[in-house]
Image (cartoon, rainbow, N blue to C red; front, side, top):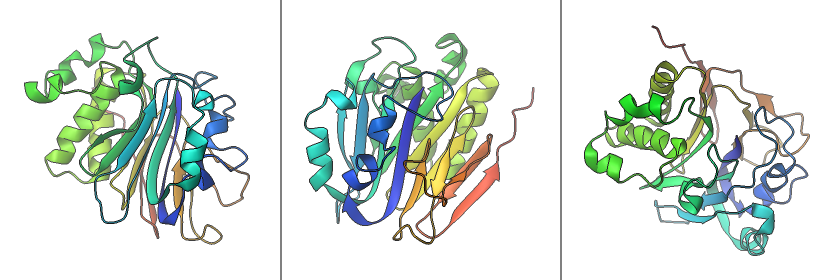
Length: 253
């Protein structure tokens, strides 16, 4: 349903990761190579990044396709960051909330994206929505499934859960409430990256030849042999120097 990517490492222009590679996120908006559902990601895009000495990320988001934005490539050429998260969107529902529904979602130090769809939305998700405090439910950025997934993740983060635990528990809850959902989640706080695979592709790149960069993405942006595919039903937690993979369990009846 979408393509997303996050990286942490030495500061560099956003365009070196998001625009310049042969199969960059920008190209994946119209020509993804490993997307299992949908063919074009033209329903919005966004990027969030961290500036030096500021823990709260900035964002640039639009409701239309990234290839139609004449400013994005220029912005990405000059903005430098050591951590960022970006996504291109194929909406679950037509016209759902425009720019407000485009990832990354953000709060405090966190940036978040959801690649997938909640099955039988919104009926299946109603019991989970009811678990949120009213002020958090009313404060959702949009009315789409991804915004509710983010609200549940954010609630756990505010309660003190680590990045990986917040994603894993949210995936388990949605998988139980809405079996058949696709729940590839991506989250960063600027220092680490957490991600899940649940119904779509995910890859990572780290180690020698990456100039200290660790990248987690829906699909590789080039043909480097260093890319590694993450098995389905897996939680990934990465820093600049380490990547850990943990199997996710199917929810019990």
